[in-house]
Image (cartoon, rainbow over all chains, first blue to last red; front, side, top):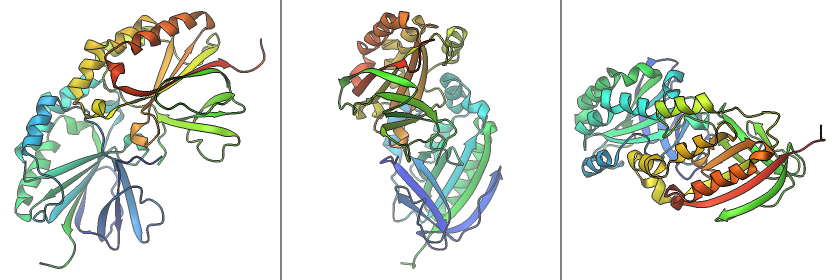
Length: 188
Length: 188
């Protein structure tokens, strides 16, 4: 069982990104580590010095409409921009009440009430973003969202996550860890 | 990585269900086997005599609205009825064009055009059904649907799958195997 779209987030003593800080927003935290790498595939076994590994898959859209996607695609930036020397990994889980909701009820809370897509759209292209799903993999979190941005956009990123955390959707979140990262390596 | 909701379908020389026949509807088939068992958890390794193992997870609803769910729940039967001595396992995969569609476009094809939920509803409670998702697990199929029914309802089941195969939704299906099963064991 190994999806092509599987990514692993490996925390340990060395890695591509330095963990600047890790804040537990709600629920159980994660063990402290110095560095983190995002790697393609399953890095759960035989990774020397890994403190923890979280895995998730990129997948089909779950709520986004065609019109919303067109708007997002016209404005968003990809990962890996050289100027984006800051990143965040935000693992979250939603409670059983959320997962028991029907599709239309989840969509209504997600967008019509909480404006999840609309809020994210306002911060494009500065904040690049990639969602990974992991609930159906039996992982400890339901989603791992990865963000990349320039250091000058950190206040905007703080505002983005604060807005999302104030929504009705976030009442269904029972575990969230906010991990802030800086690109490791020599200054250019 | 082992979701609580993971089920394995194990085909081999012995099992709870006798494989009466296996028809390849489209795409690649599966190796022939005598019997099949549905077991909770991951039975992929160390299963003596397994010819193949397919795995999937039960998960949250992807298209069904609250109103549709209420109607289904009021009428459907659970698995494991003693009179349901026939079963079918129908593994399917959808093509990339389907998975690239936005949520509203997939919902429209699934129900407003193809009436997937409405067609299934007509055959309740006779045909009991459980869907397992596996695309994000990296499995060879996207879905494994399990059906149970009385032998006297086999014609109705044939009609149900024929109606679904005639829909627009089914144009996106590029692999489908129809496996018919009879409960193994002594006659009562």
